[in-house]
Image 1 (cartoon, rainbow, N blue to C red):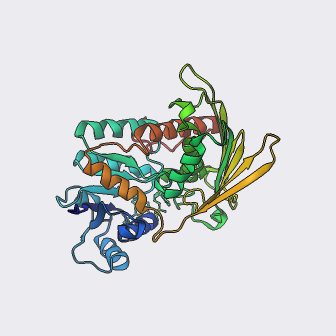
Image 2 (image 1 turned 135 degrees about the vertical axis):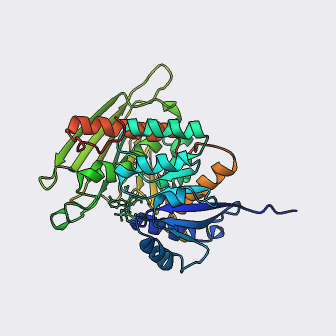
Image 3 (image 1 turned 45 degrees about the horizontal axis):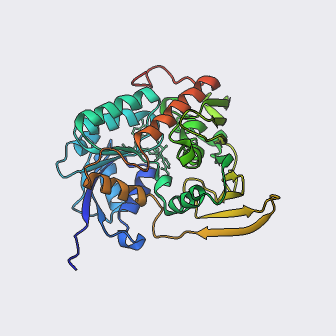
Length: 372
Ligand SMILES: NC(=O)c1ccc[n+]([C@@H]2O[C@H](COP(=O)([O-])OP(=O)(O)OC[C@H]3O[C@@H](n4cnc5c(N)ncnc54)[C@H](OP(=O)(O)O)[C@@H]3O)[C@@H](O)[C@H]2O)c1
């Protein structure tokens, strides 16, 4: 049988911070190690605000590969004809400008979470992606991990009954008292605080377990309640809790609630996600962005646990490469949007975050939001 050569996606990387380094390390992992044979990745350009930093990044994370071009501006990457797709790894409040400029240069874009500062910025980006007919996706990497695929099969297979309630948590102790106030976690100009940085992960689980549940049929939550505590250090949110209520509509039967929490000043829960069904419970390991196991408890008619099943996952790399494979496949197939993490989900996320910030009184400093 003739074998088909895998599709190569050529990546340009915008910024040289922590997340860019782990993403590039994952791009350089041989896809065959995760049983992927149809796509491969090549890093061809790194863009930084300083060319020395870009070269240092190549030396450190790509063994000084001479075929990778170092640019001292992000624009260099946008206009490089060898680049197919651009990964944006700058702080939140810069995502809009960086993704916009890349899309206008007709490059496909994978943009870090949270995809923008607000929903208006995202709507503007999606219009630009459509206008230029180019692929755009938020880097919600959790959604593409093999654990999620298996969990969804069980959760949607019917043996657990209706989904009723879920909790999901992502907290981390950043030692904020010792952190510089200009650090992106504390700095309101960079969209600091718990909600925008950590909130996408409890939310991704509410989207996986409730929004994507077949009984919901794509309906949005009818009620969003949010509460924030601000740190006196810079007035960004140190702790945020938000609740989403999904109630039946003319086209959906789901009646379920998600209680979601995030904080920058305390360790997180483990397990980090609990999804409760009429006939059982699914527990997902911490951290919720890249869990390595989940456990299902099945109940009898009296609610007693009669069976348990645990699945454990291992692979080479950090888990960011699964989303890169999705981007490569979508572009190969001529899509401008992923089905796994489509634009509707990023829009739902940003609309929820806008509402929670409104209820919590979190207003960005003037000039931060590029579109309002
Ligand atoms: N998916 C995940 O697992 C994950 C994990 C952590 C963070 N993130 C997301 O990734 C983004 C970056 O986080 P990070 O932890 O990588 O941040 P970081 O280490 O501070 O890196 C951010 C990079 O952005 C560039 N940059 C451009 N303008 C900047 C400015 N005004 N201030 C600071 N940096 C600026 C810098 O690169 P140059 O100097 O080279 O231009 C910097 O190295 C955030 O949106 C965050 O939510 C995602």
